[in-house]
Image 1 (cartoon, protein in one colour):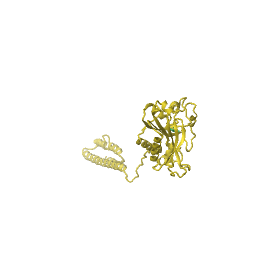
Image 2 (cartoon, rainbow, N blue to C red; image 1 turned 180 degrees about the horizontal axis):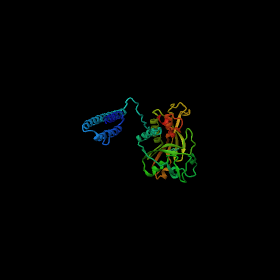
Image 3 (cartoon, protein in one colour; image 1 turned 90 degrees about the vertical axis):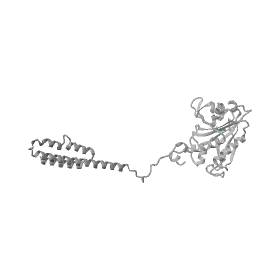
Image 4 (cartoon, rainbow, N blue to C red; image 1 turned 180 degrees about the vertical axis):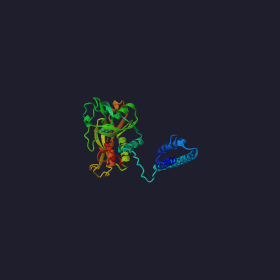
Length: 339
Ligand code: PHE
């Protein structure tokens, strides 16, 4: 019996030494020291011993039990400590590691230029308005003095959504919507997307951007138009910028002009950007046609006004020397990240 005890003890010691985790150690505890454990079982077999041997054997078994118990709790501590160490090691922060880069968004170059323009016009007292991109024939053409069979309709290839519903070809519809709802003095700009069925190339896109401007009051003249546009051009392009008015035609303004500014790239000497002319065309403008005022319920005998439509895309491509307008609409991050 003594040998059996020694064998069990030796097996227990060996097993405890090799236990790898808390679960295993608990299983061993139950297997050897539990109520049905091997060391407990041996106590129950002592009935066959002589009365003298019994206490001796009992003592031996109890010694073996407490020895194994001691080992078990020591091993349990060890395992716990090891687990804590591992956990701490895994959680340490290596402050020499490179930081994770966080990507920040940026303004689209069109928005940067638009924000600048809004600032300039707001400082001159203009309100900023919004208008619908889906327009009626009435606002986009009819009230702008372009009746159904007027040849000027050919100037703007139109996307039709229905018989009277179109994608606006110009922000000029905002002039009408404004004059219908506001009384003079009126001083507004309306930036937005416009749409024309143009063939796509480096300078044409079926979607582009305009900023419409409208001023209506008593005694407004062409000089006011010139002053406002000169002020605008010099704030955008620099104080030495010259502004040139060329006679032109728009059905809703009379007289009408197209406005060039000295090329910001070469200062007027002629270069690739201005195609050698020294000038860049940036907008169309004119004095609001009396018919248009009348259609909006404003008496042209009392009031006069001017309007302009600035091309935001051209302004942006010249400012950033972008060679192809398509880049503005492709949303390629490699391109946009440069601004
Ligand atoms: N709407 C015109 C265009 O798209 C520009 C313009 C606006 C001209 C206002 C005169 C007055 O070409």
